[in-house]
Length: 406
Image (tube, rainbow, N blue to C red):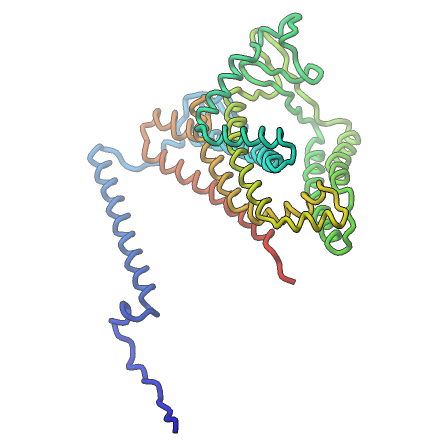
Protein backbone atom coordinates (compact mmCIF):
# COMPACT_ATOMS: atom_id res chain seq x y z
CA UNK A 1 0.00 0.00 0.00
CA UNK A 2 1.41 3.39 -1.05
CA UNK A 3 1.32 6.25 1.42
CA UNK A 4 1.14 9.82 0.09
CA UNK A 5 3.35 12.25 1.95
CA UNK A 6 2.63 15.94 1.59
CA UNK A 7 5.66 18.13 0.75
CA UNK A 8 6.94 20.19 3.64
CA UNK A 9 5.44 23.61 3.86
CA UNK A 10 7.68 26.61 3.52
CA UNK A 11 8.46 28.35 6.77
CA UNK A 12 8.98 31.72 5.08
CA UNK A 13 12.03 33.55 3.75
CA UNK A 14 15.34 33.43 5.66
CA UNK A 15 18.46 35.52 5.15
CA UNK A 16 20.53 32.36 4.82
CA UNK A 17 18.67 31.52 1.62
CA UNK A 18 20.56 34.34 -0.14
CA UNK A 19 23.66 32.16 0.03
CA UNK A 20 22.42 28.57 0.29
CA UNK A 21 19.32 28.65 -1.90
CA UNK A 22 20.14 28.30 -5.59
CA UNK A 23 17.12 30.44 -6.44
CA UNK A 24 18.75 33.51 -4.86
CA UNK A 25 22.48 32.76 -4.83
CA UNK A 26 23.25 34.04 -8.35
CA UNK A 27 21.36 37.30 -7.70
CA UNK A 28 23.23 37.77 -4.41
CA UNK A 29 26.62 37.32 -6.09
CA UNK A 30 25.74 39.80 -8.85
CA UNK A 31 24.57 42.42 -6.34
CA UNK A 32 27.77 42.03 -4.30
CA UNK A 33 29.90 42.30 -7.46
CA UNK A 34 28.02 45.41 -8.60
CA UNK A 35 28.42 47.11 -5.21
CA UNK A 36 32.14 46.29 -5.18
CA UNK A 37 32.53 47.67 -8.71
CA UNK A 38 30.76 50.90 -7.77
CA UNK A 39 32.98 51.36 -4.70
CA UNK A 40 36.12 50.84 -6.79
CA UNK A 41 34.87 53.26 -9.45
CA UNK A 42 34.00 55.85 -6.78
CA UNK A 43 37.44 55.45 -5.21
CA UNK A 44 39.15 56.01 -8.57
CA UNK A 45 37.03 59.08 -9.35
CA UNK A 46 37.71 60.62 -5.92
CA UNK A 47 41.41 59.84 -6.28
CA UNK A 48 41.57 61.53 -9.68
CA UNK A 49 39.65 64.54 -8.39
CA UNK A 50 41.96 64.96 -5.38
CA UNK A 51 45.09 64.64 -7.54
CA UNK A 52 43.77 67.25 -9.98
CA UNK A 53 42.88 69.54 -7.09
CA UNK A 54 46.45 69.27 -5.75
CA UNK A 55 47.67 70.39 -9.18
CA UNK A 56 45.23 73.28 -9.24
CA UNK A 57 43.14 71.79 -12.05
CA UNK A 58 39.49 70.86 -12.30
CA UNK A 59 37.62 68.83 -14.87
CA UNK A 60 36.33 71.42 -17.34
CA UNK A 61 35.18 71.00 -20.94
CA UNK A 62 35.01 74.72 -21.61
CA UNK A 63 38.16 74.49 -23.74
CA UNK A 64 36.01 73.10 -26.57
CA UNK A 65 34.64 76.62 -27.15
CA UNK A 66 38.09 78.22 -27.48
CA UNK A 67 39.76 78.80 -30.89
CA UNK A 68 41.78 75.82 -32.10
CA UNK A 69 44.64 77.93 -33.55
CA UNK A 70 45.87 75.25 -35.94
CA UNK A 71 45.10 74.18 -39.49
CA UNK A 72 43.75 70.86 -40.76
CA UNK A 73 44.65 70.05 -44.35
CA UNK A 74 42.21 67.21 -45.08
CA UNK A 75 38.66 68.19 -44.09
CA UNK A 76 35.10 67.44 -45.15
CA UNK A 77 33.47 70.53 -43.60
CA UNK A 78 34.45 74.17 -43.46
CA UNK A 79 37.23 74.88 -40.96
CA UNK A 80 40.04 77.35 -40.33
CA UNK A 81 42.44 78.10 -37.50
CA UNK A 82 39.94 80.44 -35.83
CA UNK A 83 37.34 77.69 -35.49
CA UNK A 84 36.67 76.17 -32.08
CA UNK A 85 38.32 73.08 -30.64
CA UNK A 86 34.93 71.39 -30.85
CA UNK A 87 34.79 71.95 -34.62
CA UNK A 88 38.35 70.71 -34.94
CA UNK A 89 37.30 67.53 -33.12
CA UNK A 90 34.33 67.17 -35.50
CA UNK A 91 36.67 67.51 -38.49
CA UNK A 92 38.88 64.79 -37.03
CA UNK A 93 35.89 62.57 -36.30
CA UNK A 94 34.58 62.94 -39.87
CA UNK A 95 38.05 62.13 -41.21
CA UNK A 96 38.08 58.98 -39.06
CA UNK A 97 34.60 57.93 -40.20
CA UNK A 98 35.47 58.69 -43.83
CA UNK A 99 38.55 56.48 -43.94
CA UNK A 100 36.82 53.77 -41.85
CA UNK A 101 33.76 53.69 -44.13
CA UNK A 102 35.79 53.50 -47.34
CA UNK A 103 38.17 51.04 -45.70
CA UNK A 104 35.38 48.64 -44.71
CA UNK A 105 34.01 48.69 -48.27
CA UNK A 106 37.37 48.10 -49.97
CA UNK A 107 38.48 45.52 -47.39
CA UNK A 108 35.25 43.56 -47.91
CA UNK A 109 35.71 43.56 -51.69
CA UNK A 110 39.34 42.47 -51.38
CA UNK A 111 38.60 39.89 -48.69
CA UNK A 112 35.66 38.24 -50.45
CA UNK A 113 37.57 38.10 -53.74
CA UNK A 114 40.72 36.68 -52.15
CA UNK A 115 38.76 34.23 -50.00
CA UNK A 116 36.91 32.80 -53.00
CA UNK A 117 40.08 32.68 -55.13
CA UNK A 118 41.94 30.81 -52.39
CA UNK A 119 39.56 27.93 -53.07
CA UNK A 120 40.15 28.12 -56.83
CA UNK A 121 41.11 24.93 -58.65
CA UNK A 122 43.76 26.95 -60.47
CA UNK A 123 46.95 26.17 -58.55
CA UNK A 124 48.72 29.44 -59.41
CA UNK A 125 45.81 31.71 -58.40
CA UNK A 126 45.23 29.80 -55.16
CA UNK A 127 48.93 30.06 -54.22
CA UNK A 128 49.11 33.77 -55.04
CA UNK A 129 46.15 34.42 -52.76
CA UNK A 130 47.77 32.30 -50.04
CA UNK A 131 50.97 34.35 -50.26
CA UNK A 132 48.92 37.57 -50.06
CA UNK A 133 46.99 36.43 -46.98
CA UNK A 134 49.98 35.06 -45.08
CA UNK A 135 52.18 38.05 -45.93
CA UNK A 136 49.84 40.87 -45.04
CA UNK A 137 48.24 39.49 -41.89
CA UNK A 138 51.58 38.55 -40.29
CA UNK A 139 53.19 42.00 -40.56
CA UNK A 140 51.99 44.84 -38.27
CA UNK A 141 49.59 47.20 -39.98
CA UNK A 142 51.57 50.30 -38.97
CA UNK A 143 54.48 49.04 -41.09
CA UNK A 144 52.18 48.68 -44.09
CA UNK A 145 50.85 52.20 -43.51
CA UNK A 146 54.35 53.71 -43.43
CA UNK A 147 55.52 51.60 -46.40
CA UNK A 148 52.51 52.63 -48.49
CA UNK A 149 53.14 56.27 -47.63
CA UNK A 150 56.77 55.94 -48.69
CA UNK A 151 55.80 54.36 -52.03
CA UNK A 152 53.26 57.09 -52.79
CA UNK A 153 55.62 59.89 -51.83
CA UNK A 154 58.80 58.62 -53.47
CA UNK A 155 57.59 56.95 -56.66
CA UNK A 156 54.89 59.34 -57.91
CA UNK A 157 55.88 62.47 -59.86
CA UNK A 158 55.84 65.89 -58.23
CA UNK A 159 53.36 68.52 -59.48
CA UNK A 160 56.11 70.48 -61.23
CA UNK A 161 56.72 67.44 -63.45
CA UNK A 162 53.29 67.95 -65.02
CA UNK A 163 54.43 71.21 -66.55
CA UNK A 164 55.42 70.76 -70.20
CA UNK A 165 55.66 67.58 -72.21
CA UNK A 166 56.69 64.97 -69.66
CA UNK A 167 55.61 61.44 -70.63
CA UNK A 168 56.16 60.22 -67.07
CA UNK A 169 53.73 62.75 -65.57
CA UNK A 170 50.37 63.08 -67.27
CA UNK A 171 46.86 63.47 -65.93
CA UNK A 172 44.34 60.61 -66.17
CA UNK A 173 40.84 60.36 -67.63
CA UNK A 174 40.93 63.21 -70.12
CA UNK A 175 43.12 65.41 -67.94
CA UNK A 176 40.70 65.35 -65.00
CA UNK A 177 42.71 63.43 -62.36
CA UNK A 178 46.26 64.20 -61.25
CA UNK A 179 48.16 61.59 -59.23
CA UNK A 180 51.24 63.21 -57.68
CA UNK A 181 53.71 62.72 -54.88
CA UNK A 182 51.88 65.39 -52.87
CA UNK A 183 48.42 63.93 -53.28
CA UNK A 184 45.75 62.93 -55.76
CA UNK A 185 43.53 65.66 -57.19
CA UNK A 186 40.09 64.75 -58.53
CA UNK A 187 37.20 66.88 -59.84
CA UNK A 188 34.85 68.24 -57.19
CA UNK A 189 31.14 68.96 -57.74
CA UNK A 190 30.08 72.53 -58.41
CA UNK A 191 26.53 72.83 -57.04
CA UNK A 192 24.15 75.07 -58.97
CA UNK A 193 20.47 75.98 -58.77
CA UNK A 194 18.34 72.82 -58.84
CA UNK A 195 21.15 70.51 -57.78
CA UNK A 196 19.15 69.51 -54.68
CA UNK A 197 16.54 67.83 -56.90
CA UNK A 198 19.25 65.73 -58.54
CA UNK A 199 20.59 64.67 -55.14
CA UNK A 200 17.10 63.78 -53.91
CA UNK A 201 16.47 61.75 -57.07
CA UNK A 202 19.76 59.92 -56.55
CA UNK A 203 18.84 59.07 -52.94
CA UNK A 204 15.42 57.84 -54.07
CA UNK A 205 17.18 55.69 -56.67
CA UNK A 206 19.21 54.04 -53.90
CA UNK A 207 15.99 53.39 -52.01
CA UNK A 208 14.48 51.95 -55.21
CA UNK A 209 17.46 49.61 -55.65
CA UNK A 210 16.96 48.32 -52.11
CA UNK A 211 13.21 47.85 -52.62
CA UNK A 212 13.71 46.12 -55.97
CA UNK A 213 16.29 43.79 -54.43
CA UNK A 214 13.87 42.70 -51.72
CA UNK A 215 11.06 42.22 -54.23
CA UNK A 216 13.28 40.24 -56.61
CA UNK A 217 14.42 38.01 -53.75
CA UNK A 218 10.85 37.24 -52.67
CA UNK A 219 9.90 36.57 -56.30
CA UNK A 220 12.84 34.22 -56.75
CA UNK A 221 11.97 32.32 -53.56
CA UNK A 222 8.33 32.00 -54.68
CA UNK A 223 8.81 31.16 -58.38
CA UNK A 224 12.47 30.25 -58.86
CA UNK A 225 12.72 32.73 -61.75
CA UNK A 226 15.89 34.82 -61.89
CA UNK A 227 15.71 38.38 -63.16
CA UNK A 228 18.72 40.29 -64.57
CA UNK A 229 19.10 42.03 -61.23
CA UNK A 230 22.48 43.58 -61.93
CA UNK A 231 21.45 45.43 -65.08
CA UNK A 232 18.10 46.50 -63.63
CA UNK A 233 19.83 47.94 -60.56
CA UNK A 234 22.35 49.74 -62.78
CA UNK A 235 19.44 51.27 -64.72
CA UNK A 236 17.71 52.37 -61.51
CA UNK A 237 21.00 53.83 -60.28
CA UNK A 238 21.74 55.95 -63.36
CA UNK A 239 18.62 56.61 -65.47
CA UNK A 240 16.40 58.66 -63.05
CA UNK A 241 19.25 60.88 -61.89
CA UNK A 242 20.50 61.49 -65.44
CA UNK A 243 16.98 62.35 -66.64
CA UNK A 244 16.50 64.92 -63.85
CA UNK A 245 20.05 66.20 -64.44
CA UNK A 246 19.44 66.96 -68.13
CA UNK A 247 15.84 68.15 -67.67
CA UNK A 248 16.99 70.78 -65.15
CA UNK A 249 19.76 71.95 -67.48
CA UNK A 250 22.79 70.30 -65.89
CA UNK A 251 22.70 72.06 -62.49
CA UNK A 252 25.78 70.17 -61.22
CA UNK A 253 29.11 70.96 -62.79
CA UNK A 254 32.66 69.80 -62.14
CA UNK A 255 35.55 71.84 -60.82
CA UNK A 256 38.67 70.33 -62.39
CA UNK A 257 42.14 70.53 -60.82
CA UNK A 258 44.51 72.86 -62.68
CA UNK A 259 48.27 73.20 -62.27
CA UNK A 260 48.87 76.70 -60.93
CA UNK A 261 52.35 77.66 -59.80
CA UNK A 262 53.98 74.78 -57.99
CA UNK A 263 50.85 72.79 -57.18
CA UNK A 264 47.36 71.93 -58.38
CA UNK A 265 44.46 74.17 -57.49
CA UNK A 266 40.75 73.39 -57.67
CA UNK A 267 39.01 70.07 -57.41
CA UNK A 268 39.21 67.86 -54.34
CA UNK A 269 42.54 66.78 -52.88
CA UNK A 270 43.08 63.27 -51.54
CA UNK A 271 46.27 63.56 -49.53
CA UNK A 272 48.86 60.82 -49.68
CA UNK A 273 48.46 60.33 -45.93
CA UNK A 274 44.78 59.53 -46.44
CA UNK A 275 45.47 57.23 -49.40
CA UNK A 276 48.26 55.41 -47.55
CA UNK A 277 46.05 54.88 -44.49
CA UNK A 278 43.03 53.80 -46.55
CA UNK A 279 44.91 51.37 -48.81
CA UNK A 280 47.03 49.86 -46.03
CA UNK A 281 44.09 49.32 -43.67
CA UNK A 282 41.96 47.87 -46.49
CA UNK A 283 44.56 45.43 -47.78
CA UNK A 284 45.62 44.41 -44.26
CA UNK A 285 42.06 43.83 -43.02
CA UNK A 286 41.15 42.20 -46.34
CA UNK A 287 43.67 39.43 -45.63
CA UNK A 288 41.79 38.53 -42.43
CA UNK A 289 38.41 38.77 -44.15
CA UNK A 290 39.72 36.42 -46.85
CA UNK A 291 40.30 33.72 -44.24
CA UNK A 292 36.87 34.35 -42.73
CA UNK A 293 35.24 33.97 -46.14
CA UNK A 294 37.24 30.84 -46.93
CA UNK A 295 36.30 29.20 -43.64
CA UNK A 296 32.66 30.18 -44.13
CA UNK A 297 32.56 28.59 -47.57
CA UNK A 298 34.29 25.42 -46.33
CA UNK A 299 31.71 25.18 -43.54
CA UNK A 300 29.03 24.51 -46.16
CA UNK A 301 28.56 20.87 -47.08
CA UNK A 302 30.08 19.89 -50.41
CA UNK A 303 26.81 18.20 -51.23
CA UNK A 304 25.22 21.64 -51.66
CA UNK A 305 27.42 22.51 -54.65
CA UNK A 306 27.10 18.97 -56.02
CA UNK A 307 23.30 19.20 -55.87
CA UNK A 308 23.40 22.56 -57.63
CA UNK A 309 25.65 21.14 -60.34
CA UNK A 310 23.27 18.20 -60.78
CA UNK A 311 20.47 20.71 -61.43
CA UNK A 312 22.57 22.36 -64.14
CA UNK A 313 23.30 25.59 -62.24
CA UNK A 314 26.46 27.36 -63.37
CA UNK A 315 29.36 27.51 -60.86
CA UNK A 316 29.13 31.32 -60.57
CA UNK A 317 25.44 31.18 -59.73
CA UNK A 318 26.02 28.27 -57.39
CA UNK A 319 28.43 30.45 -55.44
CA UNK A 320 26.09 33.49 -55.44
CA UNK A 321 22.78 31.71 -54.86
CA UNK A 322 23.65 28.58 -52.88
CA UNK A 323 27.03 28.77 -51.13
CA UNK A 324 27.52 32.42 -50.10
CA UNK A 325 23.99 32.97 -48.68
CA UNK A 326 24.52 30.03 -46.34
CA UNK A 327 28.14 30.95 -45.61
CA UNK A 328 27.10 34.47 -44.55
CA UNK A 329 25.69 33.06 -41.32
CA UNK A 330 29.22 31.91 -40.48
CA UNK A 331 31.02 34.91 -41.99
CA UNK A 332 29.14 37.87 -40.49
CA UNK A 333 29.95 37.47 -36.74
CA UNK A 334 33.76 37.52 -37.16
CA UNK A 335 33.38 40.11 -39.93
CA UNK A 336 31.93 42.52 -37.35
CA UNK A 337 35.15 42.23 -35.35
CA UNK A 338 37.23 43.05 -38.43
CA UNK A 339 35.18 46.17 -39.16
CA UNK A 340 35.65 47.28 -35.56
CA UNK A 341 39.40 46.57 -35.74
CA UNK A 342 39.73 48.59 -38.94
CA UNK A 343 37.90 51.54 -37.40
CA UNK A 344 40.08 51.49 -34.29
CA UNK A 345 43.28 50.91 -36.28
CA UNK A 346 42.57 54.16 -38.11
CA UNK A 347 43.97 55.87 -35.00
CA UNK A 348 47.40 54.90 -36.40
CA UNK A 349 46.89 57.75 -38.89
CA UNK A 350 49.26 59.85 -36.81
CA UNK A 351 52.14 57.77 -38.24
CA UNK A 352 51.65 59.36 -41.67
CA UNK A 353 50.25 62.74 -40.63
CA UNK A 354 46.58 62.16 -41.42
CA UNK A 355 44.60 64.35 -39.03
CA UNK A 356 41.90 62.10 -37.66
CA UNK A 357 40.23 62.19 -34.25
CA UNK A 358 43.39 60.92 -32.55
CA UNK A 359 45.52 63.64 -34.15
CA UNK A 360 43.11 66.52 -33.50
CA UNK A 361 41.29 66.01 -30.20
CA UNK A 362 43.80 63.52 -28.79
CA UNK A 363 46.86 65.29 -30.23
CA UNK A 364 47.12 68.98 -31.09
CA UNK A 365 44.09 70.13 -29.10
CA UNK A 366 45.20 68.21 -26.01
CA UNK A 367 48.75 69.60 -26.23
CA UNK A 368 47.59 73.17 -26.83
CA UNK A 369 45.04 73.25 -24.02
CA UNK A 370 46.69 70.98 -21.47
CA UNK A 371 43.37 69.16 -20.93
CA UNK A 372 44.67 65.61 -21.10
CA UNK A 373 41.99 63.90 -19.04
CA UNK A 374 39.07 65.64 -20.74
CA UNK A 375 40.46 64.97 -24.22
CA UNK A 376 41.09 61.31 -23.45
CA UNK A 377 37.64 60.84 -21.94
CA UNK A 378 35.95 62.44 -24.94
CA UNK A 379 38.01 60.41 -27.38
CA UNK A 380 37.27 57.15 -25.54
CA UNK A 381 33.56 57.97 -25.46
CA UNK A 382 33.48 58.77 -29.19
CA UNK A 383 35.30 55.57 -30.16
CA UNK A 384 32.97 53.60 -27.89
CA UNK A 385 29.86 55.10 -29.52
CA UNK A 386 31.19 54.53 -33.04
CA UNK A 387 32.05 50.91 -32.24
CA UNK A 388 28.64 50.27 -30.68
CA UNK A 389 26.87 51.77 -33.72
CA UNK A 390 28.87 49.55 -36.11
CA UNK A 391 28.30 46.49 -33.95
CA UNK A 392 24.56 47.18 -33.62
CA UNK A 393 24.10 47.71 -37.35
CA UNK A 394 25.96 44.54 -38.26
CA UNK A 395 24.11 42.54 -35.61
CA UNK A 396 20.79 43.67 -37.08
CA UNK A 397 21.97 42.48 -40.49
CA UNK A 398 23.24 39.23 -38.96
CA UNK A 399 19.82 38.65 -37.36
CA UNK A 400 18.11 39.12 -40.73
CA UNK A 401 20.34 36.41 -42.20
CA UNK A 402 19.40 33.75 -39.64
CA UNK A 403 17.47 30.70 -40.72
CA UNK A 404 13.77 31.26 -40.45
CA UNK A 405 11.61 28.23 -39.76
CA UNK A 406 8.57 27.81 -41.90
